[in-house]
Image (cartoon, rainbow, N blue to C red):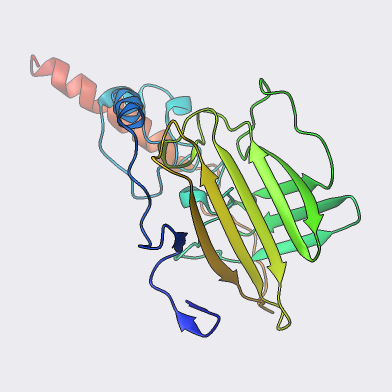
Length: 232
């Protein structure tokens, strides 16, 4: 990508080395305990492996695999680039709301302007977002993520701050800061452009009825039966 005339090889602008800070020991232990029984919350299409208990029931599989939420944090927050397909976004803005529709898995964020956050006990897949204007920049703060969608193994107190700035050529500079002291040694920030497009947005219909999920569960039951027959 190119920002301000300079080519970049990383989304991350802070730290300046372009790398995600190290996870804390507690976060690594938390993630290891999770992976003993479940798939990664942000697991994508190609994610595989792990203990067989991950296939005990449909609700143990990731939301992305169940086609309920885009994989790889394509909807966010933070919203990360999708290098595969269904890349487009459609933004609708009114005085009181901003809506961001994502072509990938038709995820839609509805962000109130100058509203109040929900109580801490109310958790949502894409978190609870509230926006405000700082001059010509939309600032959105999000918290209240569920355990099924905590970004990159983050904890329950994850906070994401996004800044959307429209430039003269129609590009939106998207800057996000991820802050969770229980997960990373420091907060970190990414930046990349949302380029304008006249392409058509298509309906996301990867798998009607998502037969793959039924098949993966049936395959797990078959593997268990074969293991039992072989005395294992």
